[in-house]
Image (cartoon, rainbow, N blue to C red; front, top):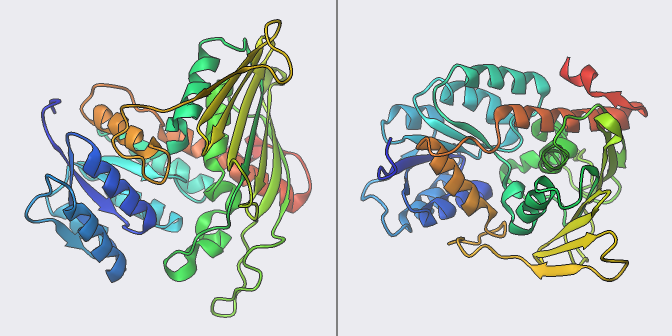
Length: 365
C-alpha cells in the first residue's frame, strides 16, 4: 500500500466513541469511512450520518447490523472497533482473521485471558493491530513523555496521575454500569493511565496495591432489579523494578475541578508535569528552579485538524495508525501493551477485593 492510496475504514460500534472516530477519520488526509456497523438502529443511523459529513464521502456507505457483514462486504481496508468492552473478544476473533488493519478501542478486552487470546491471534496476522490509547497523544502528555525519554529529569523514579472527573456517561442499554461488562472501572477507565505509567517509566510492573469503592455514583439507579457495581474512586500504587513506583488517584464525582487530569514524572534531575484540559506543561530542573518557580508552557499541536472530545489526541492517533497501515512507521500501542494495562487494572481490583498486595505474576500467569 502506497502513501497515495486512500484507506477505506469500517467503524464497528457507532455510539459516542464510534462517532468520535468517524469525525476524526473525516479530518485525516488519506482516510475515508466507507462502512459502519452497529446492532442498535439509532446508533447505526448516527454513524452513517457522521460518515456522510466528510468532504470526500463516497456516494454509497455500507450500513450493517452485524460486523460480520461489514467484514464480508469488501468495502474496507481497516476497521475501528468501538463496540462495548464485553464484545471486544468476539469481534476481534472475526476481525483478526480477516484481511484488514485494526484499531481497537481500549480496553483491549475485559479479562487477561481474552487479551492473551487476542495477542495470539494478532501474532498470526500480517496486518496492523493497534490499541486505542489516545492519552499518549494528548499534546501536553506527549510532551511529558518526550521530555522524560530525552533525559530531562534523569532516570524517572516516580509517576503520579490524578484524574478527578465526572461520572460515567449514559450508554445504550446502560452496559457500562456493570463491571461484568466493562472489566471494572480500573480496567475500563484506568488502563489509559497504567499504559502511560509503563511508557514513562520504561519498564514493566511488579506489584499492585489498591484501595477503592463505590461511594456516590449510580447507587440510586436500577436496571432490571440490578444496582450498578462500578467503582467511583480509588488509590492505586504500582511498584516497578529498581524501586520505581507510580500512583493513581481517581475520583469520578469530582467534576467541580479546574483540571481533570494532572500528571507528573520525577527523577533526580527534576520534574515534569502535564495538565488537562488547560493543556499546560511544566518543567522544573533541580539546581535551577525551586518551589513556585518553574518553566510553564501552554502546549498545542498545530498539525491537529480536528480537536474533538480528546484535545486532538484521537486525530493524532489516526494519523499514526494510517501511517502504520502504510508501513511508514511502527505500531505505537501494541496488543501486548493493551494486555499489560488490562492486567494492571485486574490486579488493582483484586487488591481491593482481597485487601492485599497483588503480584503481577499472579495475574499474568
